[in-house]
Length: 335
Image (cartoon, rainbow, N blue to C red; front, side, top):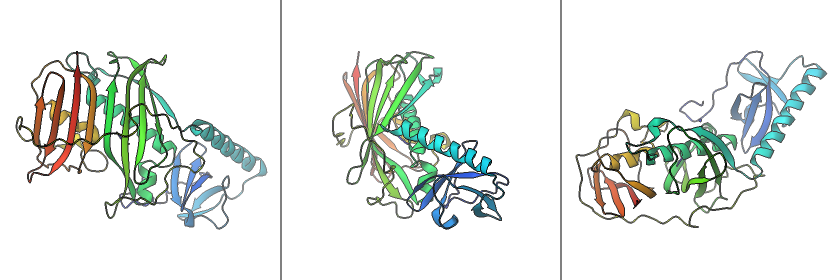
């Protein structure tokens, strides 16, 4: 429900920026996060910095090498370090409870023909909030790429209490739970600006290695001083979807350009459209949706959509040409 550059090799190139001073904002393992006075940030390998570099030091680049910023007057150095301390204090206050909040104005394209917010829009909004939060925690797309890692969404569940209306502005809140043995859970809330709950959700994520596509179970990605919030908005453990063969509906779906995300595979929010676009066009009030992602889908991969709809629910799954299940989903319907 990710779940901002670096090059696609996964290593940040040194950026040729003359006459720009960078503050060492923090260290994370073998990497350092640098921040300019304009709040621009970049992640570099710790080994590339001058020996003895500490948080708050001021650096610049010369011939693609990091060096202590030259000709710093005491007044200038003090001003930059004061700014660095202010940034660190602000960041710490923002993440003491590891909760990220943002407001989002809803667009008319976020709704269906009957004025209900679309499942794809809900997943997209939650994904955006989670991605922004991960960036602020130093474990977003670029930071993980530099470490040879990436996030993968395993399953997500959302429950609608009340659908927002056209052009509403909603408040999104999200927070991660402490990491499990092999997985990472994240919670979501969509509310009105005054705090009235609209939609809540939760998702399970895995951390994989770019080279092997295997779980990185020994990696620590969250800041060590992060004070986790442990509140859960849904059941303690998201259930697995065990959906077996169903009737085939419509023609095979072939994911296209507009379905891709920056990882080069189908974005997690798009799968619900593959199912709903194959069903009869009619009004549906979706109270709960669950999705489980079994295997990544690359562009051009044909999917056979199987689904069964009753008055109270829809069960569906996407299967590839050789019969391998790629995703499953379930919708609980209301009136």
